[in-house]
Length: 352
Image (cartoon, rainbow, N blue to C red; front, side):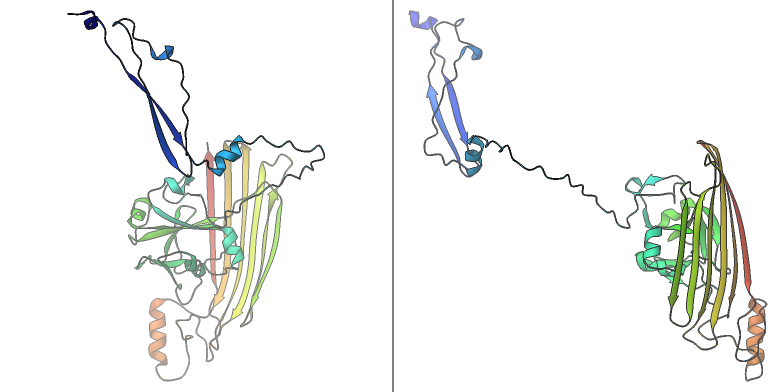
């Protein structure tokens, strides 16, 4: 074998690639590198960089702008005032307590919950719970017994039977009225998951009403709502601390409502008051006492006011009314029946 057997020829190719935003072109330049002997093959770090030309390559405007020297700002440049842009989230709530008993972000819950916040209730001037169904998909409102203003709904085609929740506790509101004056938000849980969290009358969902709580910041809000058919509703929302260290807080909500109807001989009158006191001796301990009282006077109404007195079928109508409950008999035209008086008391103790 000759001396050439002790030599090995190694070729390496240097690839130069040129890239443009507008055009893409590759130019390959080869340069043989001869190494004598097996132990004398040059390393990659020993190779010198080689410049290659990119002939005919179109330069993009972005590349041209990057190669230009930056213009210096003049000395008399005017500084603009700082502008702060704040986004408005609208009526979308980010958390809910229904179904978990704790504040959990809605994006982390595998259930369908729609929250109606207080801001939406005020902007729409809502006076009946049934009006909230207009903002929830798959939910329709039902009237209470005899036309009462109650929190009764049909969720995904199933009647909840007037059953609901108030601050997470069961509340049957079909036979007694409910006022929206002290409501902070209403949460609608839709779907069969409601049976896991207390919804027993229907598998379609449940409705949880969250009431207003005592606040540490002074609050005073007066409202007046008026409408046709003699509707008038003044309201009061007050709250704040009762002592200097703000360990004793209060909240007071009150409303009076009087209205006639588009049908003759019909109408209603309501007075509602809801005081609440919270005692917080430490950041970890909180004791809250909430009370509600409502006097609701109305005509028992199922599209036609109840009729009593002489006339055909009077005995039959009186007999049917006697079966469903005692009502005050009235001569024609009917007048508002016996007032309903509803009182509630709730005690809440939290220790973190």
